[in-house]
Length: 70
Image (tube, rainbow, N blue to C red; front, side, top):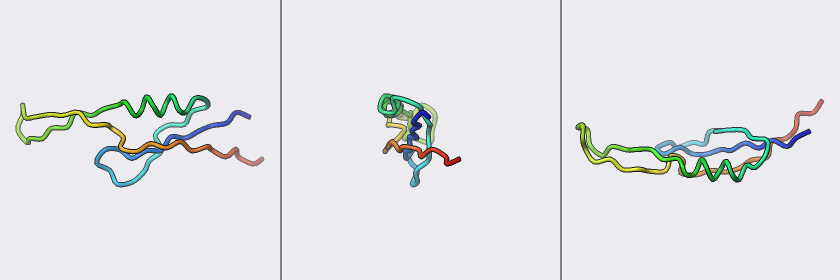
């Protein structure tokens, strides 16, 4: 049976963890790719205001999933 991994993270502006994705192999590569995702955040209520890029996930962790007993 293949080992599965879950990647859990905290999205920018959130206060709780959510499961983002499950992978079969190379969870570290997927965590690195998710860490590079960014959001554009507007600092003004008016159109054309200043925008900046922030990381989409402030925290990421890899969890090994337990196989289901039969």
